Length: 113
Image (cartoon, rainbow, N blue to C red; front, side, top):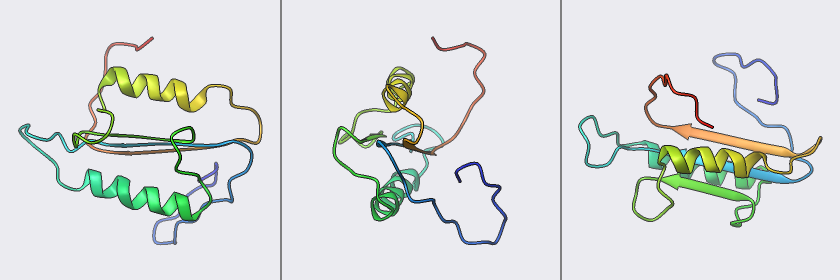
């Protein structure tokens, strides 16, 4: 949202990206586990198309996708933390970063370093 407040019921829109553009998309369906979800991978696929249409490139240097589908890098805690580092590495004022997460959440009592 670029720091703008979001109002319920209003269409979502993004500012045109500028500078270096990077995106991180994470979808966790918890495949084969109790409580398995069924829409998180679809969310990532839909968001990928949305941000590509908005001007974000999808090459490997610009976009990272983590999904537990066996085809993408697995969204383990270690890989997610590393992906956050990749997303923010070398950023400068005016760069555009995009993060999308779809999955369950849990609180963590341990700080990741």
